[in-house]
Image 1 (cartoon, rainbow, N blue to C red):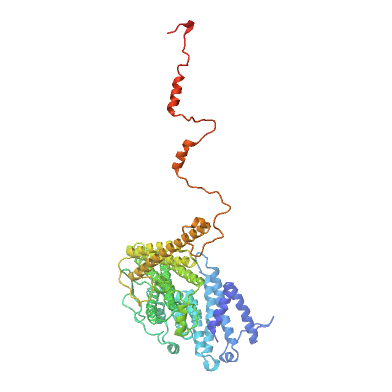
Image 2 (image 1 turned 45 degrees about the vertical axis):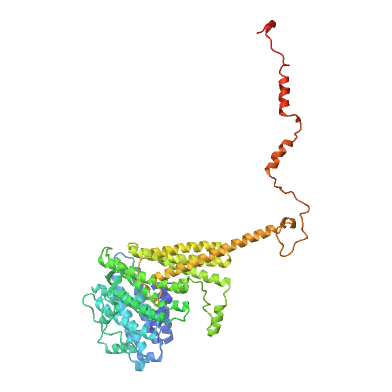
Length: 619
């Protein structure tokens, strides 16, 4: 009959684009169509007559009678929810006549749902199986619990929701359907938690424990049917002495992180943390048996632990939000313990994220220059595998692989930044130094991957500069890494990096640096040689007589013709000697010596007329 699926699909389809009023209107139309199919609709202008009760024989004859009861119950429930939504913004809340109206509508919905349970209980007549009866019982308890919730009768409300929780949990285990899980997480569990809070029940008691205690054990038929599906659901759980956490659930009571041991304040966190530990053990076993698996297959094994740690993070956030909603201050010890728990579970989740990315980068975190084969390659024999290893990938595919590695390193660096933002990490000097060392380590690996891409396309100088910077960062990572215990290679990869891995990457980068220095030096020599050969090839044969022509002399170009103007080097002493023999226009050079010039000058002096004073008298 798929009772739960019928209800959930109707709600989702109506509430996707509308509200509860829209759903109420749709249900009225569907209910009218159902009555028309059964031939019990009141004719137009006809006299109203009270509809007859649905019997097991009617259900056996036509399954539409089941839909009729479900639609009747859902219409009353939708009307109650629309009234509640209309008064949601009132300052006083839903009080007075509005609450009475809501309770009245939910009471009608519960009666219709319980009538369906009564009809289906006659399995020999109605033809319903055990699953149909369980779904009808869970739906009736769900509607009854909603009515008692609005009526604020917390103990009966908790008992009704406990029946729904146990039945949906058993059906989810048997059918593996997400419909029951969504109903549990979105509707049933919050209602049980709120009812338990109103009954002054400690938050450390899990929802499963609350449901087990409130479940009516007196209903032997229902208990027998639940045990037939899964006997562990109703197993007895003895509580601890003072904390209230169920010992039978094997949930931890404390959490230790960075020398801080704190009590777990919420049972949901304890349950999630237990699941994380189990997922960690399964991951260790998977990694130990994954010697021949590819990186993507190994990384897929991390999905479970990533989901479980995310559940722990969500449970912690939910517990903190509940305390904030109750007005608990940040200085309260409960809030302080939850903040430490929050840091611990977030650190755990981010660590496994980084570990998954490290697996995808390849051996030694991608430090070695290895390019794995395609993920979609078909399995072949050993000989073909060796042939694939010997065949080198083209440059384009190598660049794609290196680009993927750089993206993985970026993701790791972003996760490291998010760790720094967690409460209490900045104050922990040892942890902050370790995170900084890891950051330098992955930045160095990113530089190395980018340098290799430059080397592939021929930019050896850029590759050398990037590798030189990568070596500096790797040295800083080794220096800043505080002393820690060695990490086993058999453990799954996470955030922690062993000192041996750091030293290995440092040696690899140093070797790459020396290799690329030689490559750049050879490239420079080849460039100079090619430039010299290009220059000498333009000279005529007469200018290269001092060189032996290995490939033969070019007799077509013995000299430069026609000759071109060129600068001729001349020694400076030749110009000094020639200076004495240069004749300039307008000046004559006497053949006599310098003394003859001086005698002629002295002979001209007496010929000069002496000065006399006035009237011929002079002294």
